[in-house]
Image: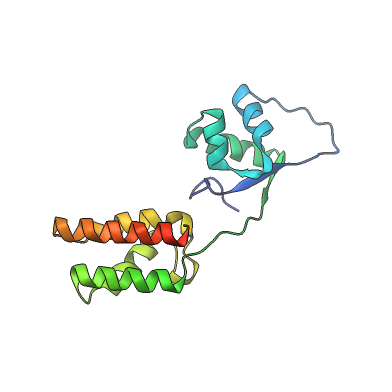
Length: 156
């Protein structure tokens, strides 16, 4: 697991009980983050609770992980379904024509995912990036409104 790069805001960690009584030097930020890590809250929630930026949270979580004071918890991540992508393709095709499918695939790959495993927490980012490809403002706005309604409808 590489938590030094990539998106970690959705990740969940829990404290590890250690048998060895090693001495660790923890600063205030590390201690406040460690106390928040309960195996249920995501890193994004912890950042909000502690008031720390994601950059600082990343460094703190990485250090705690390297010290074996925390471990990741497997969390089921919801994925965008086929119905969502079918709707996305049809709405984008209305706005820009038959190249819609290629643009969707390119943006999904640019975000580091594939169509069958695209996480729902990045749906809004996907729509924002795809909408940049729509030249006419009225079509772009209509596309974004329809897709945001679909995101809400699906509960993403």
